[in-house]
Image 1 (cartoon, rainbow, N blue to C red):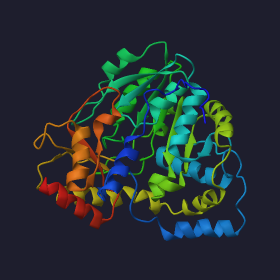
Image 2: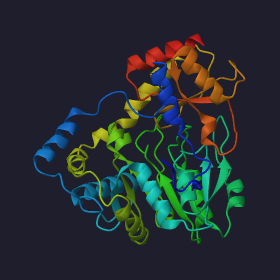
Image 3: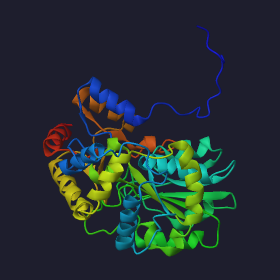
Image 4: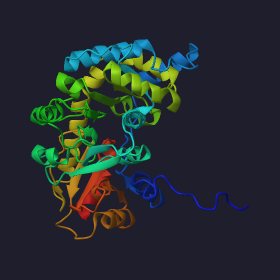
Length: 385
């Protein structure tokens, strides 16, 4: 059958299959241990799945209200105020979304217009730039460099101009595991004070910080919160990435624009899971102890690979650990990552793919949100390389 039209002009001509799909496919093909894609290989709390089932049985199976059910929004408001000191109105300033990625796309779509510039810090999670480009915007890049991935805010200042519509931050940071400190937030606040620049703060790993670090979320800073979208994720917090459940916080004027897009993008999200989360979220220890839970896994994994030829600077947050391989090979990280799968049976993510232009620091990202047995098998391989 002939194709029509014969030529399609792609709106994302440089975008192909994501690295996560590529590496997971390779891992399956070679039956490799998969520390590439960021999801746990262990189950969520059985009590949470029981709550989902209970609410299905209770008949909560039709459309939820467009912004999300009120009991869940109220609990998010209480949690946010208790942790960060800022009160968001559950009626007008909190929206439940189909995961963090949908919230990010919705916020960008609501705010970014043709020829607007959006400043991102790379290596950057791969959903940011396509959303910017689909909305006619232009991504402006600030490059973070190994091994610390720190920000020089004086250099950032040089990238900001009257075309800058949005700055996207991500803390704790995927893929590097670095975090923004209080000083970073103070400098960002100073940089955007008196401007029309919107902050989009990707905080999906807000509860996964290590070594006594405290999450410096935008909500802690009134001078930032009043012009920011904050995105968080139940999937990362409760080990349920496949449920695709998240939420967005923003002041009323921004949330009004967010909801205009949200209602036509997904309208509303999974009803019985919302009711289940509204009950489960009352157990504060389920998220307050998450950092300790993952720090034990980070420390265990790092101890296991300590005798290898890889170099390791312990991550400050997320459930990712970067390992450098300069002492092992001078191959491009993409080639080395593929060889690890084919020759050694271990899948990781090459960090250079999170940059828009080649920036190969000979670093791979490994996910340690895995059972101890999985980490042990992976570390055994790493120590043989």
